Image 1 (cartoon, rainbow, N blue to C red):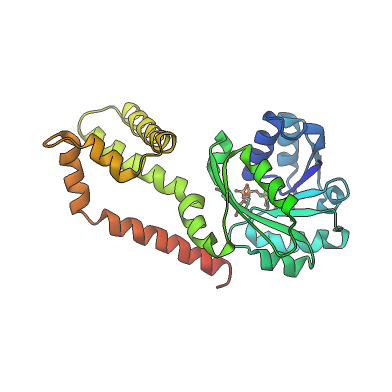
Image 2 (cartoon, rainbow, N blue to C red):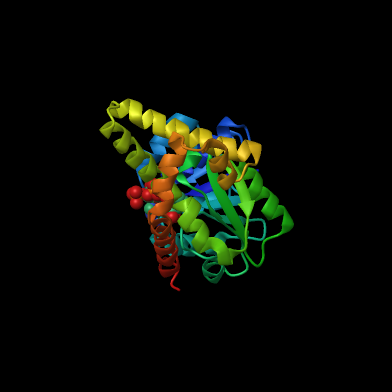
Length: 266
Ligand SMILES: NC(=O)c1ccc[n+]([C@@H]2O[C@H](COP(=O)([O-])OP(=O)(O)OC[C@H]3O[C@@H](n4cnc5c(N)ncnc54)[C@H](OP(=O)(O)O)[C@@H]3O)[C@@H](O)[C@H]2O)c1
């Protein structure tokens, strides 16, 4: 399979690196087009892939095309390549807020898959959610799942869930980073050095996520398991549960989901 990236920025680089390093695709079968010559040079140097300054040029070489420009540039890029698209092409868009219907209106009849990955794909720990357009085939679903499994976890969901997905796993790295930063700041106030406090917060966040995933434990059960009566965790949990942190988190996700709806013109 030959795969082309239209837009070779941060996300494209992370996805290409995962694909090549995990040998899902050979470097010689990856093509990337970007208007910035510095981006093209840096990708060629780091990953040994083929690059081009012209989007339409890579369409003929590839059967899978990953649309990885910013959402505001996507209509123009799809219009540029649409005349060259044939039935052998699968379009995979990672642009936030751009629906499969938008893509199909710019490239009528195209086989389209929409994916929402997150920045953790740069370390192979993305949560990627995908949904299929009206003309996508069963094999397109498998292709998208296989490609994005190289950079983390993948699930398929109906497109109606994409605003919530964008809010939770798309924007989520910023929210979790904020929590790590605030917990570390609180521990600094208790006397820890800043770098130690951040390491402890980060590693505890990572370990807790792994613990929940690997053991299948529900968050409430984990909390109960570590909250012995009159112990330190129970004392801290009393403060958390008595606070409005739950409402703040609901408002955070609600605001991000609302913005996702606005960006997709709804
Ligand atoms: N970053 C995230 O956490 C994240 C998460 C999920 C989804 N996404 C989606 O991923 C997509 C890419 O995001 P990113 O953060 O990787 O953006 P980025 O780093 O800005 O990469 C986009 C690249 O496309 C280039 N470009 C602009 N117009 C172009 C055109 N007409 N033809 C070819 N290349 C063009 C840009 O060049 P210039 O810089 O010179 O304009 C830039 O190098 C976005 O649609 C975003 O919504 C991002």
